[in-house]
Image (cartoon, rainbow, N blue to C red; front, side, top):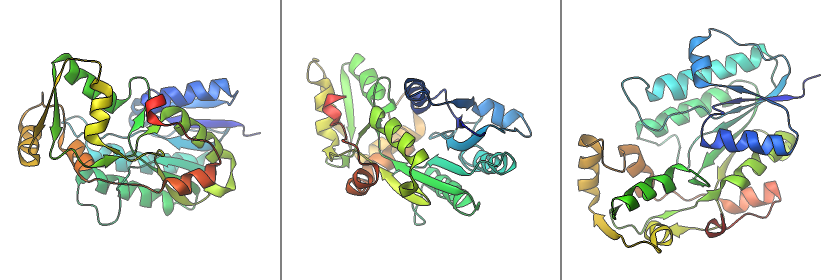
Length: 265
């Protein structure tokens, strides 16, 4: 009897929290690392009934490209799922991804979505905003700047984010694995609040003696292209300045859970 969930990318921020959540809820799972996916020609997961596909990269390097990781590994996940007779894939894309995307990162995520949609398998595609919790990417970035006594805000800082608690994310995934309400849907994974980025930064830095400095969007992109030490990459800027906002009410109605305000995470 198939009673296990496969998780690709279980060593990442979401993956670590998800496996902990599964442990607490006595949910069986198997972890698949990106390295295993890249090295092995094929994998068989006969005991698994669903796949949570979290492997992905948001920054390209010489060693890893968007195409190689976000697209090709998604093809491999679909192939593994079919061979293992897995019925459903849950995939993490990105808030703002669409057929009109022009950023390389968003394009790779959109193509990955299409691979899953056209696979013939059941699916839930989540498009997450910033996911907030212990050691999350965005908060760690700001805290690194805190240690340098200066936080940079690209552009006006008036663009909004819709952060969501990692606890809520894990709960929604567990519900989506069991509920037909999430079948063959693309859903924004966003929290209940739309927070201006400047406010979010000030909330984190309020107890510290630190300078908050704005830098023009043009200068921010120039630094991102030419300085590895700059706190924001090109795709970070595309996401922040894109001012992407999601449909929280749809997520709340489908999941039926009470979501946490980010200040309380």
